[in-house]
Amino acid sequence: EAGVTQFPSHSVIEKGQTVTLRCDPISGHDNLYWYRRVMGKEIKFLLHFVKESKQDESGMPNNRFLAERTGGTYSTLKVQPAELEDSGVYFCASSLRGNSPLHFGNGTRLTVT
Amino acid sequence: SQQGEEDPQALSIQEGENATMNCSYKTSINNLQWYRQNSGRGLVHLILIRSNEREKHSGRLRVTLDTSKKSSSLLITASRAADTASYFCATVLNRDDKIIFGKGTRLHILP
Picture 1 (cartoon, each protein chain N blue to C red):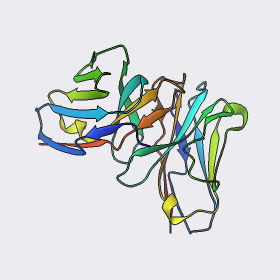
Picture 2: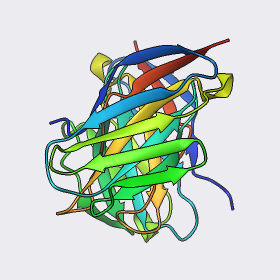
Picture 3: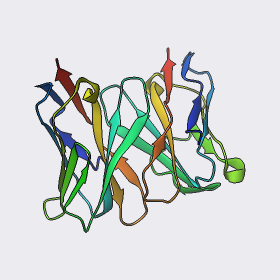
């Protein structure tokens, strides 16, 4: 089966610009998660979708971040406007059930200059 | 707030030795999972241990869970160069299936 894919793999943008990250989960996986890792720190939970619904978005830092999962398939995470502290690696993961192992994508490395 | 906390933050051992990493957490869990991350890649699931289990094995991996102490350990026996990676524990909370990761342990296997 195809794994979780994320696009782009790298993105360099200027402060104030907009960036949209995309995640394609494994087909049939209802659960989709977004995480972020800032250099040397923990992998921080951002939000969790079950199908197209946001199960938990308690980790979203502020209203500059918008996640969608229309139709319950792929998901996008938009940052608008980007700030310097948004730099980091954004991981997407999917799973069959809510408490089962996660399958991760390779991440999108976002650099805001 | 952070749920899982791995210890040590970094570990260097000789090839062939055993590596032990620990994880402590704060709240009630459904299960605890260990993942490995090679540089520049996504995390890969290694092993899952449920809250009613105390020990689990998978190949050269041995995981223990002590729910009274809210801690887990991952033992990698007979380490190999290919085991060099970062290792993370992830706790799955009882109440909402939220999966929380820690900072990880960077393991370096010396030839």
